[in-house]
Amino acid sequence: MNDFFQNTVEIFKKELKSEFRTKYVLNSLLMFVLICVSVIRFAAGDEKIDNEILTGLFWVTIFFASVSSLARTFIKEQDKETSIALKLTSVVDSVYSGKLIFNLILSYVTGLISLILFVLIMNYEIKNFSGFMLFFFLGNTGLVIILTSIASIVSKANNKGTLYPVLAFPVLIPLLVSIIHATKLTAEGAETFSLYEEVIIILCYIIVVLTASLMLFKFIWED
Image (cartoon, rainbow, N blue to C red; front, side, top):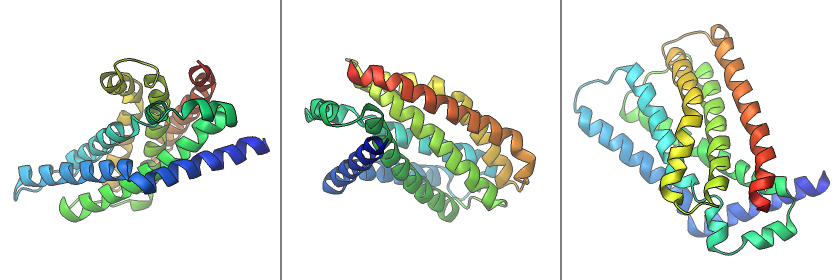
């Protein structure tokens, strides 16, 4: 257990140092978000976009930003020929956990910046902010778990670029539907307690996909 936590921290530090050195993922995420918000604002002109539509656009922006940047989570290890070293020196689960934690932090930061831009530029109104943030973090957590797992699968395939979104979208449909519905209601002012069913559904989804991801990753990584 100590080896697992120690290896997880080391993998996270490695990802952090690599990102500080190249700034590839963060720059890709922020640039994508900025372009999306700018295009939506210019397309809308002076017209006010309905809050319900803005909720959908917000999650579409986060989804495609994450897909475009997290796809290389494991591919870069093969490109740099560091995957063999990781297999020899790290506990299998810690490789997934370390990369997952790093991706989660990136996703939270990007999502918060996206939210700020939507509020300031798109005049996105959120009446139940605490409830909205609850579903914001739940949604991002589920999204990153799935995308990190799919990235490990795609790293073994030939058509890496096209296969990633094709595999990710069908698995994420239940989560995206629930999250968009819940955040739409909280933005309109619905009480968080009244959405307890959505909270339970999303938590169950996260637990199931995380458990399945950890089980499958051992076979994928050691292949």
